[in-house]
Length: 237
Image (cartoon, rainbow, N blue to C red; front, side, top):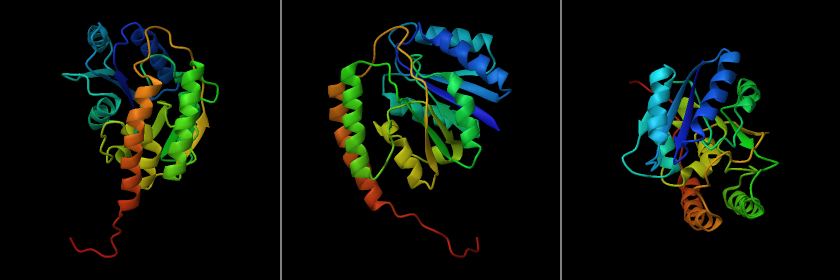
């Protein structure tokens, strides 16, 4: 089983090397067959230069650079399309997700799950972010019929052939558990570690997340109501 780590990057030049070191140490210790795909989402700092250096020095590293900033969902979608693994693992580039959680998530995935999504129960963020996320998750769950505590956690383990079928419109990364269920996935949630950001500042604000998330939620709710999976009874093709 090959693992593809897909990591969107936007102005994270100082966080990339420490994250790369953590991922490779963990993956090598677990003897995973893996690749690390970084997707530079129009960074204005030296993130792309750091990625080029990593790719030169490590055969497991691949990078893609978007011509302009298109957001996290677009970056993830490009990474998914180019991933060669049977399993895709996503995480943020800011170092707040802990690669040490991956082995336990992979063990749970191996029990027959199609997606294991992280739950940052003890978040290392500002009070306003924690409150905003709690409100957002509550509204999202109520309207979509979900029970996920933390859809915003980027640390996710997913069956590659399923997630590749999802069209990653803007904002859809926040609804991946729901969208995976629509593909027939068995989704479980696990508590994971969450760490303070090492360097830089967040690319999101509560107001921006709430404004965009509201319209995204309406779109996903519409998709849930209109989705009509077709089951083949017989075939001769």
